[in-house]
Image 1: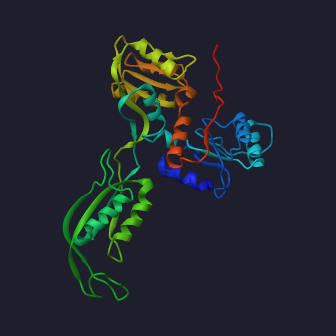
Image 2 (image 1 turned 90 degrees about the horizontal axis):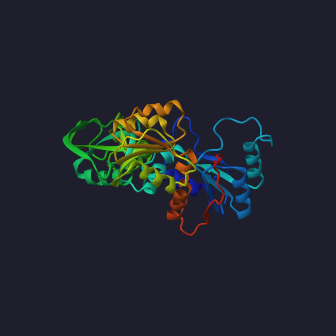
Image 3 (image 1 turned 60 degrees about the vertical axis):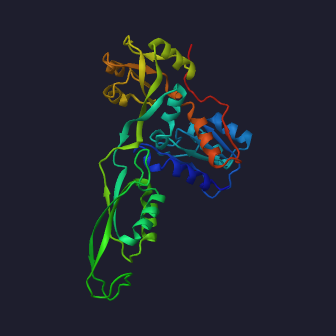
Length: 364
């Protein structure tokens, strides 16, 4: 298949507009129209990963961490990034990164961590704002059901675990066509009054185009009256980190041992134990220290992440246990998640997990 078929599917599942402003997710290198034969999935793109791609006949490298964050001035051989790009161009290998758009999705990186720990009743720790819109559309009453079905099928009307959600009120619409109009109802320069339904829906930013197109296709009017309103509501399906419950409380040291085994940690750095069982667990893959206040506010017993700095550990303030299991360790199962996602859509396509460990950190 073509590369754009794979990337379009990934971006449909995990839209690029969910990524953070600093990020550079998406196609890093390659021609979207190129034929792809095999995908190699890894957490990072290193020279060892490129060699593995060449050796296995993979012409797409799918990674979590982008290789390009800042501009580069040359593609030589003096840095690893330059050598990687040079080799990939030489062997016609595409690189695609799916980073914070995967982090911020409820079914993404943090869901995989929660699953590995064994958490239940999980939800986003810090829901994201400015991703939701309200659509208000006015339609003749006899077209209400058709428009409702169309906009919901296109992605509107989803609220948490509920779908096809909408609200309608009846009122009177007034309009007067001019001589250039081709009205479904009414005549030129003759005022028209008609019973109409005011229909309201929540939709996510990434669905706006599809929903508006479906609405206009289903609506009987030549000119559709509608409002699209940005909302301040938090989106509970999108955001940073995750919080959930253990099936049964665990002793603090027992839980830390469980973490060390589950994530194969060389070491876990943790703050003072609180001498109480662990039940509510907050977490964030990668570098998540910015979510510590949110974990405390939601009464988590422990916060699991990576890349905590020395002074940031003081933020626990004897209210929570911080467990730094490492950046790579927290995100290592992301690659397996991506393999699952691709095979779910393309079950016969060749996709494989790297055999290389890209963790740059070693332990004695």
